Length: 393
Image 1 (cartoon, rainbow, N blue to C red):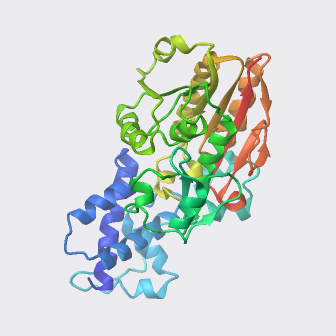
Image 2 (tube, one colour):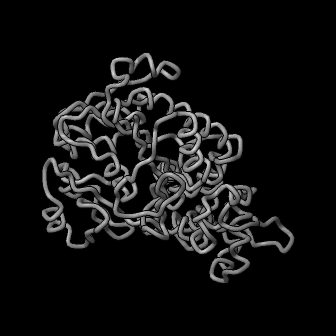
């Protein structure tokens, strides 16, 4: 493909992503895979070039552009190389018009800036959209971090935990034996720190209330050394089903999974009420801490959706609290840098749950944020997370 044809393909793909963001369709990654699968003529260099153009545009505009062409035309105003690709050729985009619409705005939606944590100052905001590295968690049920590092000479050992490694952005590990054989899991440093905050130990009863596909569940299994009662629950069957093959690969043999019916969680967890040493709530959230991995999610977020996830988080905190045993702990986490999802939720919880108290999560990174900890791309090199550890009386 010629460079102009690549730009035209990027415009077509970005329009698909914009429509999906507006209508609640698939993720940008999923849509890109389908787009290229239907265009077998595009070689690997073409696919990389088109994808880079599209993701540059997604990162550039925090407000959803009217259409893809308006985004690229605006970018071309300050990029002569890009401007030259609007050449009107057979497979390229039409030439630009001086008066045609142009996308506007900066990389963050204006409405969300007042909602961010006070620690996300101006100099931190650009890092929220940097390209993320590839973090791994050495699976101590099967190996040690030292053995994994010996097989991955390009990996850096991270000092914030005892099992985290980092590979460069774009490193292809999907077909490497260390992953296929279950010696590592792909997991951001922030997620690994949340597992550390749980301080799960062998023999405990631990509930991962919003387990999803089970990345943190597997970290808990390793911390418990396959000894105890570990329950992974979720209301999404598709996500929970992904945990079973991952657990088999990781050698996690003591997991129980429970598919919850929304609205009936307390009934379906009644046997655990007051019996869990640790309850982890990795709650549904805005996803604002993962914009560097999924930048198009900025276009899906709005005040109405934010209010909806805030209500869901409050509900889950109340459910989780009922499951914690006396003197046990609840760890609340969100992949968000929005204050009300983090410190605000915990502050409200402590006001309404007499006797509960926040305790030090004891992790090797982050900054205090209200009664919890916040980690960010700029300060910690991780995705953005808030988490707090709460002790039951």
